[in-house]
Image 1 (cartoon, rainbow, N blue to C red):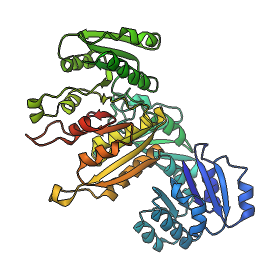
Image 2 (image 1 turned 135 degrees about the horizontal axis):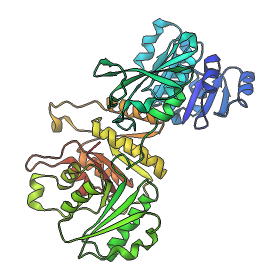
Image 3 (image 1 turned 90 degrees about the vertical axis):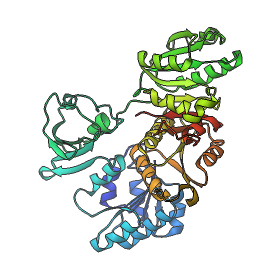
Image 4 (image 1 turned 135 degrees about the vertical axis):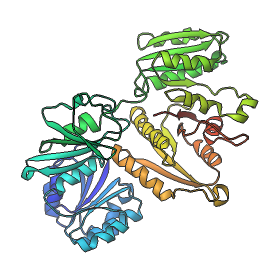
Length: 472
């Protein structure tokens, strides 16, 4: 992650001592001597610039437009406010500033800047902010210990496990809040999504908590299941080869315990294409004369499937009038469906975003996949004209992008932002021509008679492969 830090004072030194090699810091300070002394001491510093940090020319030279974070840590509030203002104008997603004069704080908040007042905990608070804003850390025992407050999230492996998994010699769980009520730890209590945990330990035990609890998650598609189901239905020999090629590309880059091949008896036998797969995966082949949809549901239940890969289904005109077939299937399963259109490798991923829980699951899945596939992620927000949505509530795009930046900050992944206006299906399908994979989070499986279902139309009309996620 790229960050610009303005000011090389004690707070900055405290922070630099904690940052690892994944951070690329440009440091700005008026003192050339101080900068030259610091450069060889910290591996995270890649560039230093001597001068006035409030200069827009200097900030531009520092790479302001490309920065993921800007931290204004000088001892001058006017300089810090100018830095924050320029960063906001250039669209920097994450901005933090020290505020020495409490009366100045409101001016920073008007810019949407995260603020800190000077104090003994600033150094560690800066570090914790950069690592994970969901975690709060408080100093206790005159700085000898720390209390950590963290939330159990949907993608956290400890959700659904007994509280005993938190036994650790470095810290102790002292209590948790569930639905606003304080609960005392007992061995058979099961942790749930949304629980706020209160942990007590020695100073700087935050890293252990982050690595073991907050940052640990099951990679795609393991949180839905360990297996991958590949459905071959109605393809000719070339179609079977193309489908298995794209499936193999994905399998080579994600985690999967076993592979199930479901093919119709009238389809070409996939055996000759699977010769190179033996030894890599536990492969199970099923031939069927029945409806593939019914068999997909049965296999997903019996084989612990985490992902279904298929070509687009043939549409039934009468049924499509009353229900979105692909979306309905996705909602009936406990795992995502990938509709492939031979657009691999997936180097660019697009996520339609509206801040619903499922669109956030889609974005977090895209982030996970981007790390496994070495891909980039962009979110698209489509603002409908007023004559389309009428008086129905419409979340302002700036609020949606603010949530995107929060997710970006949590996962330390850069996310591109795209704003379009018009018909969502038309805008998104047009945009998808520049991408290799679209990930859609579906909230509703039903539609009104003769009324189009946006998610279903995206699976039908998008030129690239589409991953549909309808369950968490």
